[in-house]
Image 1 (tube, rainbow, N blue to C red):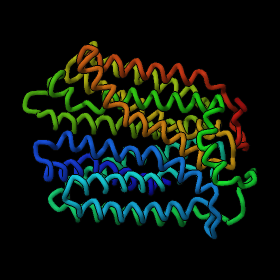
Image 2: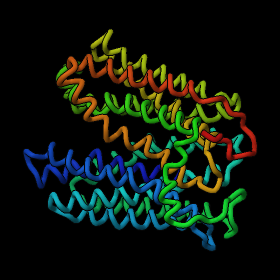
Image 3: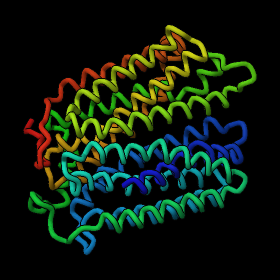
Image 4: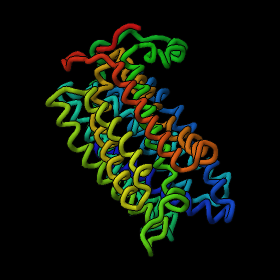
Length: 405
């Protein structure tokens, strides 16, 4: 799980931060910002649609390696092929198709591997598993950005390196995640494909699962609403130190944020395994993020912004270290683990699509950049209120702890 997450997010981070913007600039020149928004916006549809569908299919898969491993391997190989294709295209249409395919295929393995947590890991270790999974985001992002910057003058080589690394990581992960052919404990009788499609989002009818989904979605929305406009904040609202360009300021802020994410993730999982206060950690994360986003309102300076960045990263890390552990406590049905975690993944990807529109509305209509931080903090506060609606669940060997609506 650690390998596929690190190199999966390395591919996403390297392409999205360095390689794809470089390609867009080469083919679109001055129209690059609008073209990049089009390419990333359309591809977001793949990241929304693929996880629940692939999760459902993995629940129904029977093979000599079990349910999850074939999809992890297939997702890695398909992602590698998509990355190589993306590195070879030289038109807007090619970039649109290529990044759409990458977003669709990379979310196969990254989503299916989550189901190995309730499938294979004892419940009292789910906090540690959530930490291992969460660490893939900051570590992978750093690796991807560094590789992208190193090979930016040779785009096909850069894509080839990322493709090879992710394919190998997926192959190793698939080998380690293989399981027996027999059905999972507690699995229900096989439904028809039509019934599965009709019940794709049935898990949202369960009260605790629904509130955990809502809290995740609004917390990520609050974080991404501000984080996605970092460059514009440093250009138009907060002045970096003399001699530091806004783009350099973004790099500094990103580094500080990733340190906070890594620290928060590393400590949250083991602690939640020990104290078993899942809601408390999510509540702390939401309130810390709210407070962090209010800092630039009180101190609109470079030091205030860095404090906001550090605290926001720490808040996100605390959440990443516990969110999957909490989710496994409220999964409605053991036989639909892949499907339900795929639906839960939407609470991560959907805010990334919505956040730019919310941020733009705040800056252009609601009062400028102070409104941006105020709105982001208010959204994060709603996340803390949502998690209070989740009833505490004991950690036991039983995975299906969700209740009827």
